[in-house]
Image (tube, rainbow over all chains, first blue to last red; front, side, top):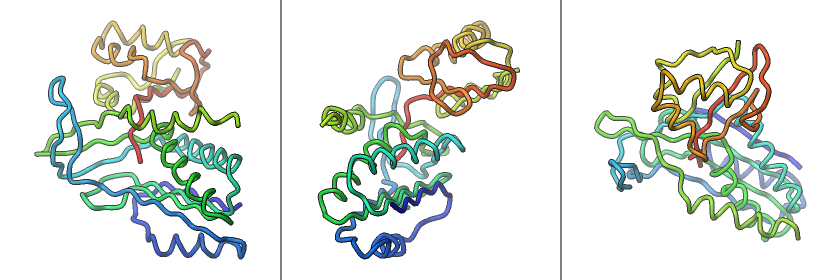
Length: 164
Length: 79
C-alpha cells in the first residue's frame, strides 16, 4: 500500500497525481479520483436563516499535527475495509478563490468497486472527521461555514455496514 | 499551565481570551471562561463541540497536566 497524504497551501496537479496512482503497481486495474473545487456561492447564516450567497474568497483552517493524524487514520480505515493498492489525499489550506481546487482523493485498486467505494468513504469521512474549518469572505466580511447534516448522513451510511 | 486553542468560529472569541489557564480538566476550563466570556461559554456548551488534549479527542473530564495542549473544536467543515 502506498499512501500519500498532504496538507498544503499550494495547488496540486490532477494529471500528475493520477500518474502516480496509475504507476503505483502493475496490478492496478482501476483508478478513481475525486477533486473538490471552491464554488462561487456558499450557504451561510443570516440571523437564524441559512442563505445561499456568492462569495469572494474561501479560507481553510486546520489543526497542524492533529489533522494529518486524522487523515492517516481515515486512510488506514479505508485500507482495512477495501483492497487498495495506493491512496492519495491532498487537502489545501489557506485562502482560495472560486474555481480553485480544494481537495483531491485518489484511489488505485485491482478492481473498480474497491476504488469507487473507498473514494466515497474517504471523502465522506474527511468531511465529517478531519479537523478543517471553512470560512468565506463576502464584501470584506468573514463568516464561518456551518456543518451540514447531509454530510453527517453520508458518513453514517458506512457505519451501518461496518460490521459485515 | 495549560495551553488553550480555539478553532473555527470559536477562534473569533479567543482574541480576548487568555491562551494559558490553570485547570485540571477541559470542563473546568469551560467553567472558568464562563465568568468573563459568556458568549464563548455558550458556544462551548454546544453538544457538537469536541475537545482534544495533545491533539487527541477526549472527554470533558480528561485530567490535564502542566503543559497540556487543550483545543476546542467546533463541527468540521473541510472537503
